[in-house]
Length: 242
Image 1: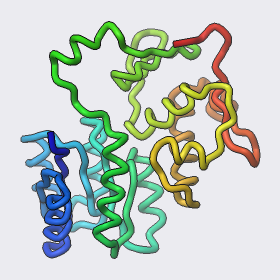
Image 2 (image 1 turned 30 degrees about the vertical axis):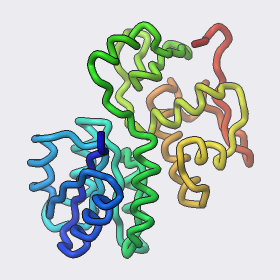
Image 3 (image 1 turned 180 degrees about the vertical axis):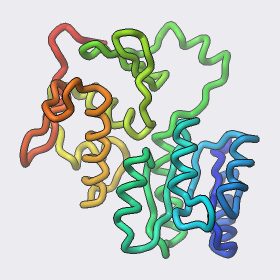
């Protein structure tokens, strides 16, 4: 099945160029000129990935992305103007998977789309899910349980811990490499980022968000510890396992 992508961009020429290029590279692409049109499309059909321009008239891309992230685990790439680092940081804090800086080359868009889609959970057919249900992979840590196949985390009371796809990506990296020192470069590589200063910042933001959700005291973490000048270690308590 072709991955379905929605491109939300108010510049007609750029919108159509991105759609045509991604379509020529094997994707099923829909377009919207603003957030209102995008909401109508997103309510009517499912997509694997959204490319959202941040600076649009009316509702901006950050607001649309926040709404999207509250409803689904769709991959999100923000398009931001050069020099607006604040928009990129806010976008990452809202759960975006990546961003591109305008003006950009179409080959860069394609590379980032491919990278994000590798990390987006693909919907399984109902029968396949039924067959595999008995072989799901789980890991317990403290009072939490991570379901790697269902891509969700539950607390001691069974309540689901709301977690963006990008946050679960990082958590899975730590849980499958517990009690090992991981550099930012290693984490970036594991989740499909190219290591650079912005990627390191993106990793730090995801870790900060994770701590708020799984640590009783995020300022003094029990699980996700910082090793100054080196990276991070996820300390798996004795007795916790798959």
